[in-house]
Amino acid sequence: MDGKASMVPFLFFTFFLSLSSSHPAPPLQSQTLVLNRLPSPPQSLSWSDADEESQPLTSSPGGGDPGSADSIFSVQLHHVDALSSNTTTPQQLFNSRLLRDASRVKSIEFVSAAAVGRGAAGAGFSSSVISGLAQGSGEYFTRLGVGTPPRYVYMVLDTGSDIVWLQCAPCKKCYSQADPVFDPRKSSSYAGIPCDAPICRRLDSPGCNSRKKTCLYQVSYGDGSFTTGDFSTETLTFRRTRVARVGVGCGHDNEGLFVGAAGLLGLGRGKLSFPSQTGRRFNRKFSYCLVDRSASAKPSSMVFGDKAVSRTARFTPLISNPRLDTFYYVELLGISVGGTRVPGITASLFKLDPTGSGGVIIDSGTSVTRLTRPAYVSLRDAFRVGAGNLKRAADFSLFDTCFDLSGKTEVKVPTVVLHFRGADVSLPASNYLIPVDTSGTFCFAFAGTMSGLSIIGNIQQQGFRVVYDLGGSRIGFAPRGCA
Image 1 (spheres, rainbow, N blue to C red):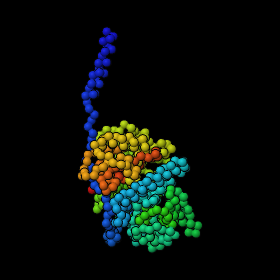
Image 2: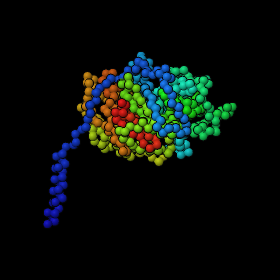
Image 3: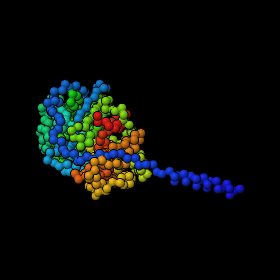
Image 4: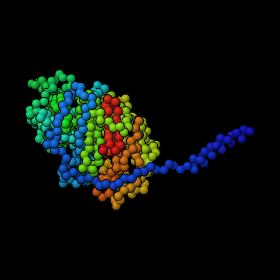
């Protein structure tokens, strides 16, 4: 009797194994990648200062003053390649982008490590040591008016930094920019900030002009570049919307590898960023949609105010880093390739620990997404298996998974989905398999990093409307959001 009873679980187990072996693995989910070449720089920019100046203005209080809750405005964004010489080849543009990207990532990692090493005493004020302009790494810029009457200049928009600053006359030293250097003496709305003002004390390393009793600022970079000058309030004009009393660094000594633009509009999470300063005016909401650089005739866009929030966006909560308030941290739980979760990628690899180390940030100024090394290796290996039908090519720069797609117009590639808490983001194929030369080589647009910090870059964000709802402490992703 006991023998018969022991046979029952054995037979059941054997039956279960036979059922399991008779069901093959789920089919690989794939999508079509239409093969486009590396984009050439656009021949001209679409802005006309005459058009900007002819628009009726809507005034708005800036700083922390209340304004109407439904205030909105939008601006066009262009990739920094549009400031390049028309004689630059697509290959040279792409190589320059990768060099900028490497510098950008090193700067972010430097700031993150410095914040952790500094401890809680420095919390909230480390944002001024990084900028999207460091080593020319600002990727997207817009044109806005500074002062009264407004003088229109190119400004980089950067979610990885806080301070708003631009070059100002008289220059002790100024780098070359596309427009005349802004002269605050010709603006009726320019005003110095007293040394004892609360906004001055928010600077990481504030100074004081002993003669004028006005605030001084300095923004330093890991490569030795810096900008320094007067910290002031000024009016900024975005198309038809005028925003008054914004804290702005007026730089008289600006040294380093900066390019083209007059300065930077910091869109980070810190207290001195443009969204934080003007939060009540625009309900602490903004969004952008970055078009693929190959669609150079169509600019990207950024919207401030309630209309920045797309109805189709899927949201994930923002996480606070107690040691560093500039970056937008989110929780990445896993990644799927071909419809199957990659087993080696777990939430623990992306955890932000109590010391402020690790985590995942969303950044508009980084191009290629960096994943902590173990996660990247698992993702790469899974993608290589799923793309086993494609002809491999030699490594290219930081990319170690490349394919020779010469002679083809389209290919099937496995799907890639980023699983954030509360939001699954399915990437278009062009957001992770990109052209790197003019001979048909395409590479998997992710890279590994030995740092514990992972960065979701702008190549993976292209085509989505990325919504920053700071009041709701969340970030949203709306597919096909550039329309």
